[in-house]
Amino acid sequence: MNIKPRDIVLEVGSGNNPNPRSDILVDRYPFDNGQRAGGFRIVVDRPMVVADGYRLPFKDKTFDYVICSHILEHMEDPKGFLMEVARVAKAGYIEVPSAASERVFGWNFHHWYCEKKGNTLVLQRKKEGEQFDGFFHRLIADQIWFRRFFEEHEGMFYVRYEWRDRPLIRVDDREPSKTALDTLDKMAWSLLKRAKPQGIEDSMFYISWMKRRIIRKVKKITRLFFWSIQRVPLNGNIVERIVACLTCPICGSGKLVRSNGKITCGKCTAVFPIVGVIPVMLTPVEQKKGY
Image (cartoon, rainbow, N blue to C red; front, side, top):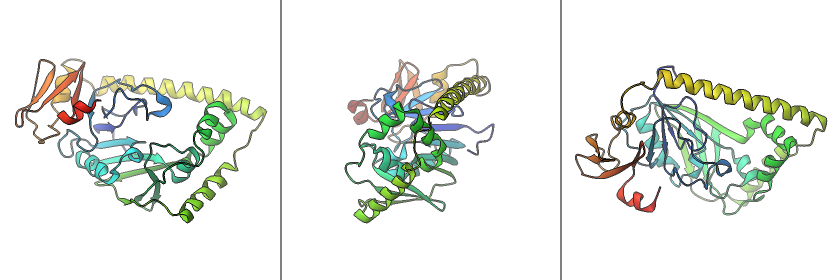
């Protein structure tokens, strides 16, 4: 990711594994872990705002960079979501499962097959029901040889897309034809045929894999420590700092007043609660639906 040292970075849909470089996190469902990897709980280790991705409560181009990792495939309106993300940031990074990965793992709450063609993200509506159900999810969790295969071919399981000014996206809302699905299945099968147990080599891989996990964890903690020194002032109120960069998701006004555990819009008088130190910038209707 082309992030400069002084860039202010937003992460939308940070979930249980926020990027160490993100300065402010946004998540719509902090208490619902149903669609998170492994069902893990959300991580809140820096300033966070509860908000809807289609109505981000920030002024135009507030951020230098925005990260959206494994979020786009969940969105009913991915184009509308990306246009809103591009409104609040000057550049960004998107990561999604590849179309072949969708056919292999079959997440039933994902809506799209995703591919990168040139400098454009191409999304096609998924067909209801998936071929392999949860088999490969269990396989990657239980079998070290399959995890090894996955990590060695990681680039084929993910689509990574970086943009500046605005992302280019093409969306086909029609379900793919049988011919298109057969092509995807052939891609998935040609990939899976490379996976096979390696015997003693897998034991060595497990040891090296554990070492890499420990090293990554140490690096992440180290990055967060230096982030806390460089990016977050050691004095002042964290909620006030967040409120200073917010706008009303209903009317777009930046005239927000914090008092008595809530934020009030000075223009439309909408009220947004503060849970702990986390502003909940959802419309009244969204608040009733829960977060």
